[in-house]
Length: 244
Image 1 (spheres, helix red, strand yellow):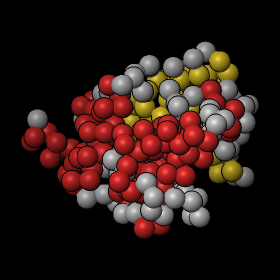
Image 2 (cartoon, rainbow, N blue to C red):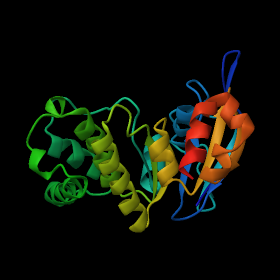
Image 3 (cartoon, rainbow, N blue to C red):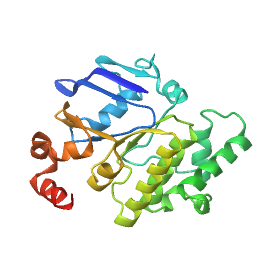
Image 4 (cartoon, one colour):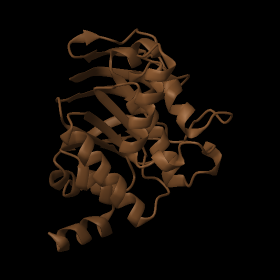
């Protein structure tokens, strides 16, 4: 579904992404991991045209979206969440999702019904009339997901959707993402919560200093010496080996 080739992004003298190649198959969950500053969120920002790449191409279902505008990319079927949650502070939870639904829907009542259905799916139906600022961190993250789903994406980009969640909330979110995959969504997830990334991903790519240093199954990544050295650490690798 998604093919990224030779993706490069520079900010002045800093190369945030250098010649990044990866692809995502339809129905797959691809994980992206790496230290802070490795370029993970920059990939999402370039794919969604918040930043323009200095080099490379991005194909969605074979169509070149590299130079499209952000709203056009959204309408072609790419939805995303943000690491720092973003919402319309003057609108209720429901109206935040209604606003997202207008990506594809012109009638308010139809957009409202779509938003209600999405809120039910992510477990926020009972909170539809409250203001987003009153939500817990977990519910704010799920509101981010609800807004993305309301745009009717075929590809979901999830940026640290489990950051700050407790173990119970993390398990709930993992279950929700697995359900979305079963429903046919293709997902790329950036995450530091290793429990989540290892449980969800079919494949993982690893970034370090803007370069891709590894790609493989969760087990292959956990045993890759370069990944252990750059990111996971020997303690994580030893603990995972004991469990297996």
